[in-house]
Length: 499
Image (cartoon, rainbow, N blue to C red; front, side):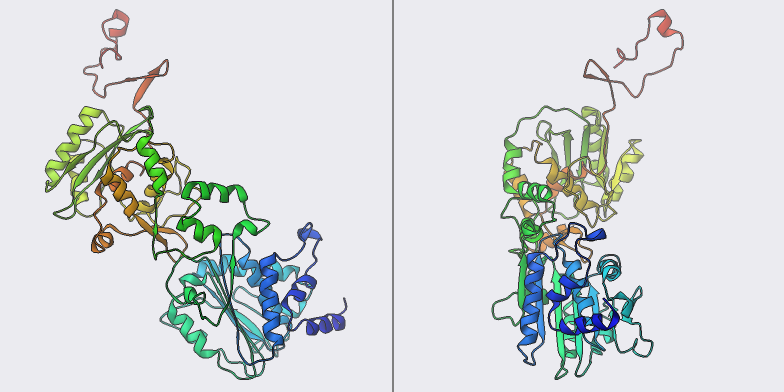
């Protein structure tokens, strides 16, 4: 296609983003070999934009998309950017996302991919922060900028005026963008006789805020919900595992698969079915023995020592203490360790727990100082479904939840109640974060002391401190007494008998 034919074609699809996508890229060739074009939900949204533009009214085009995970939202964003800037001279726009990292590494990276495939890419230049006209005289007036949002500096969204031409505003992962940014952007889109297209995309992680209000009854936004099972390139096996793990009606599946908002602002972390099955399951006590310790922070709370050997958290009873000092609790931990010969002691070291860690170490026992707010290891011996966690506490609870599918819990109503009281949401980085214990207590819930202690047993991987013969563990004592180098030759000393 020569330059004149290209310009004529771009002018012909000025109000038709679907025709632009179908004709603007070399479908079936090179890296697009085997690709046939947009997914049905993308074509549907492009058709919705076309109809609104052809209606000829002065209202802005408002498109909101809520979807499950991995349905091609960034791809649709890239197409809309390239269509908007290449089919209307002096188009201006801004693109933002929930975080600068998301904006730079996903949204803008996807734009770079499709820019390189676009048949009209020579008409524009792509920089790390903008796409703009290759004509140096118009690069300031014909451009779309990548703009990280800031609640302290909203000027980038306040100056979006382009009288008589076209304005494009895109919010990617919009559920986590603060309301103030929405309000400033909305107030700026007031030019008459101007094509205004505002498209927002996101996983429906919160049931409050401006993104959620786009889907409320009576909203002026045109909305699209995308179930990721209907998208050709999503991992159907992974989706099936999610549904099996969390339940088809769980809030996790609603958000990550169905593209639906949670029933509550924060979602239940554990599946009642998994809990009940773990309380009725029989397993062999086999594997490393961990002592998880949660230290009471308030007078009504309990300090808890919770033993777990591999898949068995039932056979060895937990110990609960109220009003106990850090010195006395350290002594109780030492006694439990001596009686059970634990392979690891894992103590919640936050707050007053730090004193217990110090006391246990003063007793010359090795222990792990577990910081709930610390960084996650990004590794688990259990299948946590590729989840991303905001901190150590969320990661431990993720391992506990995965362990429930094969582990054994005490048949205890208090533990069941505590597990079901744990809720979570997603932070702006799309990481799982649990509701804090303090917030739970302010909401009238009981402190999950027992479950926090059990979760500590998943903080770090442990190996049994034992020599194995014929599959049976034989404990080797840590203190063998005085070493006699010739005792074995005389037959007087056997370290296995010394146990």
